[in-house]
Length: 379
Image 1 (tube, one colour):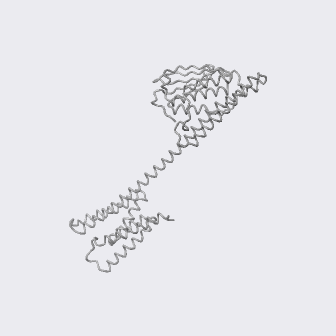
Image 2 (tube, rainbow, N blue to C red):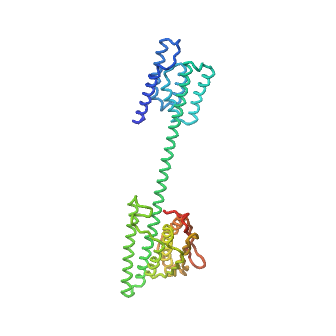
Image 3 (cartoon, helix red, strand yellow):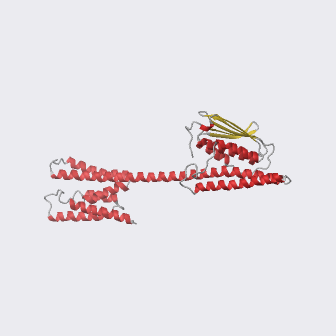
């Protein structure tokens, strides 16, 4: 079924074939021995060929070969034949186009074998004819390859857009996990303390209730910020405009929050020239420490945590979060187990690496991040 655009293009090609035949009628070399009836037959054949242009989409190869062979006897088929050859070059495989072009080449070689006088009118018309044929095939191939290139670029663009959407979803999932898991684990620790020690002094209960309220409020605020990223497609890489991003200096605040939750944390900041640390590396280090503290609160809240940050420019930044393995399983806060996977992805995106697992009686989370910035990728 032809679309409106197809009809417009077909009519345009039909008019081209008609106009070409009319305009070139006086310049075509005719055999002087042709009778008046033969000349009329030639013109009728040209008109029929122009009408056959509307069949070019269904049988372009058949039409092109038939018009080329008939063109040996009739002189007004050239316009329609050029349209047919153009259609073959655009819509058929290169092998088919090559076969059709070979027919033209054979005709040209036979013409050269006859050895016509280069100064004769017949020789000039024949050379013009073959030049037009070559131009039609060449232009058709150009259109074909241009369409293929555009289709390839559109496919790559669609794939790139889908990949960008996938990466954005993964980034948002990591951000929500890192932010909300930290706040909710603090809330769970304080709520658990109230549950297991209902006879605590009123001041302690009030303080725990305040922390729970503040943690819940901050969790909601963090959730609104993450959702704000989803609703702000023009926001920069760091999220919504104006949203503060954590840095290495904010690790002390994480440690203070854990202290307030009753969890012992020892923090060693041994990084040299920390103020020169790239923002993406500082943010990644912060998230690693945050996830490490969250995991300890989930699975080993009664253990002492040691956080060590060391390194210098040119050597990289090393972040270590370690805690003794608990003697008994205890009560762990449910978790999906996705935090360490997300941290590994963060470290790889920043050009670093992440290791975790039991070591010498402790569970150790260790990350190395580049400091010189040569491999850092801000996502």
